[in-house]
Image (tube, rainbow over all chains, first blue to last red; front, top):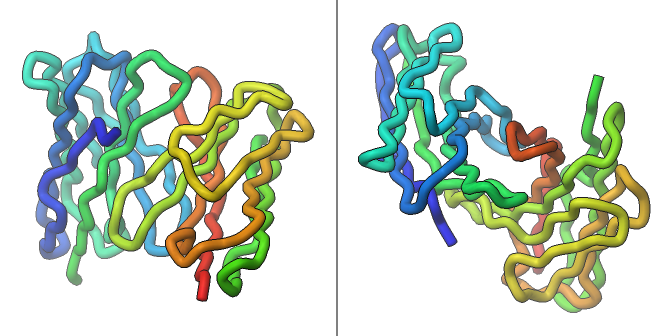
Length: 110
Length: 111
């Protein structure tokens, strides 16, 4: 079943702008992860945030987690054309598998 | 360092033909292994996962099967492909669900 749902489905911005993507989920989690996928390629892990954390940074990435609202957001600051990709959230609810959302397609125009 | 190999990159197969996709991992032992399928513009659907040799869990009833003959080898198979089996297949490995490492994917077109 689909646990995470990203919003928006697609996002188009100009270089230098910030991009914000949201993820909502339904059941309690141990951690939430964000992945990036370039067209026709495999996914690459970006960042993991645990259920007892509220915010995490990695370079130009900022992830927040609100367990009371069962939601997370990924912020990419000062976006670049090379950030163009699909971004997926994935939730770990304590089992052996992750559940991925449908993704947000981000297009950054020069 | 750990690497994951998945092949072939693209595959065009007729309906009713067999399928075998292979995935191997290097640089780690006893990984959890996963097969996902991704329809165009959609999210990832978990097909199979394995926590050890010969141990396969199926998430979705379908026309596919998986095997793990060796610790770092995961094979996705079908005896007779259907049109609906078309998609982008991704192999991944991980440990403790902290982070998954994905292969480069196989684009399968069943015609």
